[in-house]
Length: 386
Image (cartoon, rainbow, N blue to C red; front, side, top):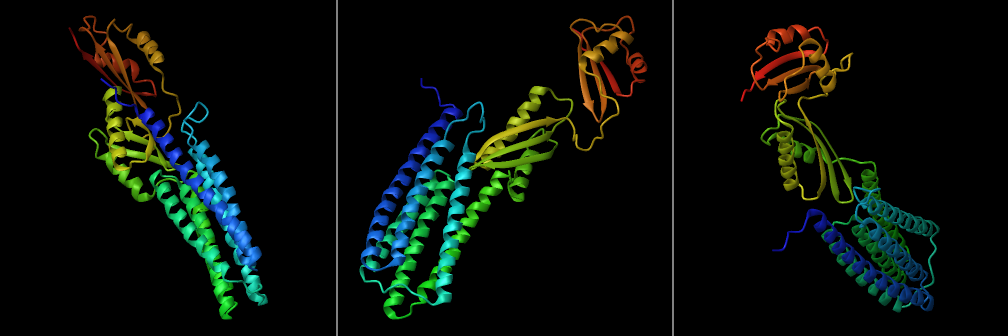
């Protein structure tokens, strides 16, 4: 009988599938950018269009950015290791930041150049009709690769691939500028292409700023939205055994979400029951948001944020055992001692395996012997018997 795949194995398989998809679409984009770059540079040179020549150079810069994407995707899809236990997705975030910065730079350069041309009222030499053909091929090709790349990016949940898709669309925008400038020049309205170029450049800057700002927010560990945070808290509070949630922190790493949550439970339950309650909370949260990578839960017997620290450090189990031995004698064999550290006080439970015939381990005597300690809260003695 074949054993089901472990979550770690499924995660590795998903990473491999995503890497193959990202590499395939990026290589296809590189081939298209190289082809368009050649026809636009050659066409701009032969048919007197400086705009088409510059647009061709822009296409070759897309080839360089595609190489960056391939390298970043390979690094970011590596499996977690000892030095990076949460994985390498932040490399993808950094790559998205770089691509967004490139978009801003390209848009700013286009806006500046065409603004100067508009103010000066200068124009390039009149282009010939093959420029329209080359620009139209560029627009159609880059729009197609944009839609294809964005579809793959959304399917594999990669902001870097989506950013690269928008980078491809900027080349389509610049080719539209070439179309507008060529048509405008042929019709005598030379300034029309410059106004359109500035408007499109502002759109490119806006797209680049969005990706850059989102990446910066992720790099500084910005949490989930207040709505999602409150939804996760409600899931935890509605879980049987959870009394309250007094802290929930979140951060993003790539498309994944990392959570830290403090759960308040009844103080008298066992460690194993507290852990089981925490696992039920984890299940509920994972069912609500599918891209949660890791949930680290902390079980609290009380809301420790509301308690003021004591002036004296409460004793450890070994120290409590020594104090009990000093005042009450050795705890009988097979008996148990349970400690509850609540509201800066120590509450003791002593479970005797048989009745105390000597009258030492009585409630009155234990309370009398221990109540002088500043950390003492209460004591209970139980006789469990055979």
